[in-house]
Amino acid sequence: MSTTRSFALLGVVVLLCGCAKSDPQATPGAGADAGVKRFVFIANGDDPFWDACNAGLVEGAKRCGLEAKGLRVVMEKNNGTAQGQIEKLRQFGSQSDIAGVAISVIQAENVAIVEEMKSLAAKGVKVITVDGDVNRDTFRDARPFYIGTDNIVAGRLLGAAAKAILTARGKTQGSYVQFAGFTDNDNARARMNGVRETLGAAFTEVDRMSDEMDLAKARDNVRTALVNHPDLTALVGIWAYNAPAIAEVVQERGVRDRLTVVTFDAQAAAIERMAAGQIDAMVVQNPFEMGIRTVRLLTAMHTGDEATIAEMFPHRTAPDGDLHTTGLRLIVPDTDARVQPTDIEMQGFEYLPLTKFREWLASYGLSSS
Image 1 (spheres, one colour):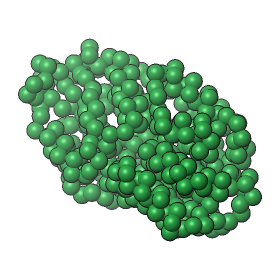
Image 2 (cartoon, rainbow, N blue to C red):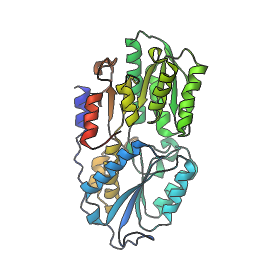
Image 3 (spheres, one colour):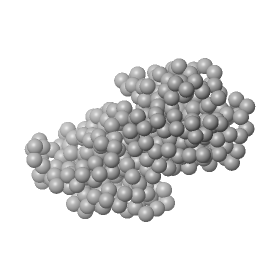
Image 4 (cartoon, rainbow, N blue to C red):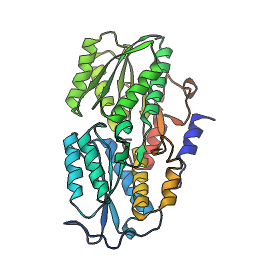
């Protein structure tokens, strides 16, 4: 089965929400519409990636008929710090109109974040993770479910694409650096491990550089890597803004001809950089779908719709049965693409030339993903 067809079959999900009614005894918090409960999505920072997710939340609210159920959904963009998320979680714990919280956890091992999540759950608030999870080995009990990308698989896909591109350019060995906001973030670490796994021993990972979601530092990290490791063969961007940061510095330093550039996610700026020939491949998540399915799951949990929960998590007692994935796309330039679907021994992803991907974005009024 082709990778495109595999992805299509995985992506065809009937996103209908249950019809159970919300709690008629709910008491709204200060300033809330009388009787209306809120689902709140706490992002890890402020990035166009979350704009696409928020569009999904809006679409999910329509599909699930939140208004008729006395519910609404809002996104809260964090300030890029763990403390910001802790304060938001604590704040929501004091507001009686909060029915559910979805959070993209900024630091997987942050005990204070975990404790605030558990505190909310103890008060009857439904809590899930989306996009960024807690460390599942130690804090799995902080939430019942995760929605988003299987990040180790995503990393393997990007690593496989990088290896194919390097091979097509006659590179059988070399070195690379990976860039992310936080190297101790669950999704960043899993992606980087997946990249390293599939690039294999012939290509050496010489550094992982964190920028703490500071865009200036993201660019400076690339400059530092190029100075410290002058023989690099590849640069790997793990978070959405790393892609344009890498492309900008590579162009600035005039080293594009010797470097393979592969990245995650598709900011509008990254899309333009790929169109200009400055990015070789992007593994793109589906934040729009994450938003839709977040609303679906929180609604089902709030209303006690066990049938919907069982549909989304059919193997919930299995080791990874609490994970619900939303698919991956491998985006390549329209011309001179150095990686083809047949180069990658994986299934369950969609291979799209840049123009086709742009058409998909336009169909939902999105500029990034």
